[in-house]
Image (cartoon, rainbow, N blue to C red):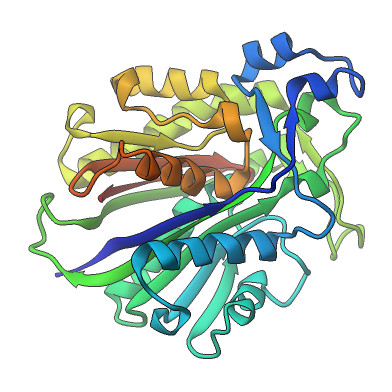
Length: 323
């Protein structure tokens, strides 16, 4: 059978780092308060000349270099983002042009923080369906553009950045020993829309709007929803938590990550955590964490890796792959 194997990975972060102490003169908060409740210590913030497209391009070029490929080798670009450069066209086609790629096709995917998990699953479907052979999957965000910097409950949580992964079609035996994407489970439920949303849009206010969140409600639902899709993914692959080499969750809140891993029986030493360094970078969160763990040698060829995310909507999902 056809499998979507990982060929290259890369990331990009704005040079500007904003530490928790930088907020102390802006809103009523402190470094100790932020760390205790979220695990976040710093985040990267895009400069005026840095955008979702420019960060996505940088991450894409890093992934191509890592894979030993050029844009000519790519058939499809799927960009997961909630902060596009323009309402239209898709920022994916902007990145396509920046890369000098004038063949194939490109589109954006909007599932907020679950965007990269949705995008990997979509790319896998295109590959297995024979519509693409090599897919560049990008998660890129500039959430600093949609924050209310007077709202201490949200402005301290988010950061900017991008990560990219190249998937390529390859023959597999159809077993859990195959490399590539092995199983996935995606969910959404719009009844939760008002718990995490942006209060603007072209069809409603005609403005970009700002992020609004009911933090306690999001936290209350997160662990149960995350474990739901992970258990469904485990069932598809007929494995358990002990079989995993690495768990790469969405980096939103250290307490959610810890509680989810504990409920699933995933050992702490198998969990990749970068929320302290990046904050919540939405659709860029998972590929950034994945890129860090590959670069520092933790994730190696043949490792069984679980990706997971939950975002506004609510959307949530998990992908199991062998590196």
